[in-house]
Length: 523
Image (cartoon, rainbow, N blue to C red; front, side, top):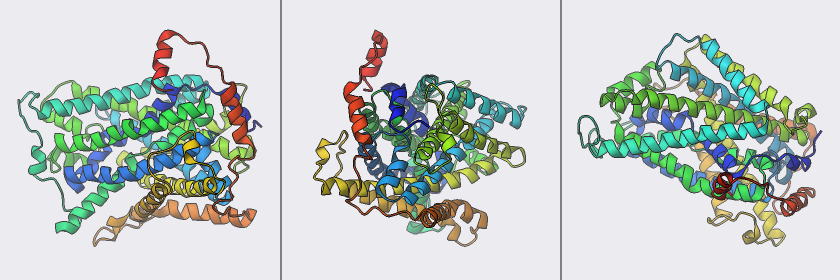
């Protein structure tokens, strides 16, 4: 079994690949399509404000991730740090919760790819689409980390190009650059209106609409965990991680908030086409507000191009999830929280058994064969949203223990490889309360008259029960001890010193001019 420290010998991901890897995981179907599903619930202002409010939470979460991961860029960092700095049972519960998050995300993206294909034809067998995705994901993740990095580099570039193009489309058309010469600007914010009363009339309904948009934001605005999963396989981890987390603050927030704003500009929340497609659950690509807007303007060819680019975005997100899930299992196996066989690597340092186990969950994509794709997507979204929030909640709890140990040992935050601008531990506490409250209100609409569904309640809250069961079971069986704040071992049994030595002895490889220029922007 390869030790945690020896994994540093296998670093291959470059700075630009790690940062685009983070983009690949964070930008997916939701940013281009699914955000439009809450537009009729919150209206354009509700959608934008929902993302702004939750954005303050994710910024604090990102800072907690950044300071810990840059300090100890180890395999599966934030889960293993939770075990070491809080409680082994706490880390195990976080690990399996996050693994299910990654593993269930793979069939989610596969289902989305199949639905995107229906924009052109429904003649392609569902089983064939699922099988093709499984083969491609397996190939890209088993060949080598290097090929994975290259594939994610180019796939993520497509995502960035698509998002920038859609923002440019919004800007040009709202100023009259469309076939009809319609200078519509912010018209839809006035007619039919900026806010929607969801579930109940009046201000209470507008608040419910805003809350629904915040819940959508908690599923859409992700990314810090994807950066962390590449920490142990970066060429120069601390430098690369520091740049990646700093870039998240402005790059991905620009895309998230910009996307929420643009969706409310190009289409009114009561658009009949959007309503019909959301009710039918067919044609994910066709249900994108951007595609509907282009269709309304009778723009030919471009909607198909957008749908195709969305498909590359979805494929990239699934590819990213396979990588993250397998590295999570590998890291847990190193700490004895998963079968030791999952820590076996080939001569190139690839945890091939962990990759294979993660790929097994791809088979859930075959659920579409007996159920509608839209229904399967709804099931997976409900479970995944809770899982994201629980992981962020747990990570911020871990950070509070880390910060307490820094203070007790007299370590100045200014000396850390990464020091965020927000004051600590206040930012961590804000994120703890923000993610905790959002987790509890995920299924708030179920408690209004006529909206109760037992299945919906189970899907929204089952991950909370799963987390508690994992924590209590491991606590009882292993009799783990809680690490009181301020008493955590900041050296991680000497692993920090190994990383320090690696950083000091690192010799950058010789690269060509183009590669050096590209890397200069990321490292």
